Length: 97
Image (cartoon, rainbow, N blue to C red; front, side, top):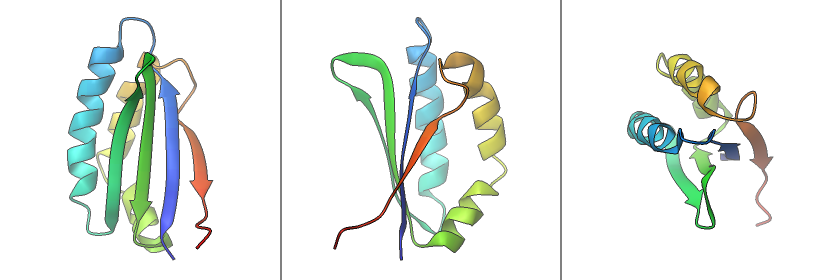
């Protein structure tokens, strides 16, 4: 079964351009992972500091491989001081069909 999640966070005032740049670079790397099926990042039209990421991995094994990639921890370390939350808020999703 695929592993699907929704990540969200809010950029601190004035950091939204830097967050968007970092996220674009990170997305390119994640999309190249063998087990990644989707990595789509968005901002909310009415609140451009709100970032939402929709991720789909082939299965749990592919998701665990994603977590072990060498670029994940550095991305999160650079992102952390730029966002209001302590870390991305993750919501794991289960398909209805």
